[in-house]
Image (cartoon, rainbow, N blue to C red; front, side, top):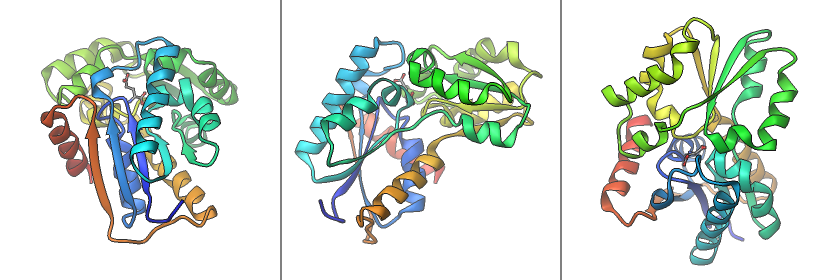
Length: 256
Ligand code: DGL
């Protein structure tokens, strides 16, 4: 593996762009290869086996077609379902997953009321239960599934009437009852403005992208693989639709 090889970043669609922006800010001299599997999104309502197969197929595609030194699974759902299997299949590769930022929430809101909004797969996986039980003695943690939200964000609707209406249906029971909301799906940070309008500005929104970027940097540094070049970003999408590539660039540029 070489310093100049790509950091591959993978998600079920455009969501992982919210992690890519943290990676690019922290390590602007790296080469990034982003792959969104929008043709198969959403992953969050699939079976665990389906998510595992799609994630392994994406890892294989990226590592066989490009020189890759690290794979960031920028998808909580794919991480919960498949990170162990990807690590076992690619023992030489640096593989970084993402998980809901519950630790940050618990550290910042001791005794607090914390909501975790994530996909059905993430919330039902054993990996999430283990994470929850590390922190639920100190805080009150409420699982909040958000069916339908990823589809709207994939359609480019991050801050419009449809998104706000869906968020009102999902979040109304929690208005006035949360100190923080963990955005446990990488798509959700793009809807942060609408989420804050529904829940109120005083509820702190937490995402895992920054921590994932820092962990990626630590691992590359430890392996002697940090690159400080000109920086490059390539975006691929399984939907074979130029509009999805355009949307990905829009999401990336508006948030940096
Ligand atoms: N972005 C993915 C995550 O972080 C999930 C989206 C989906 O359901 O496909 O969980």
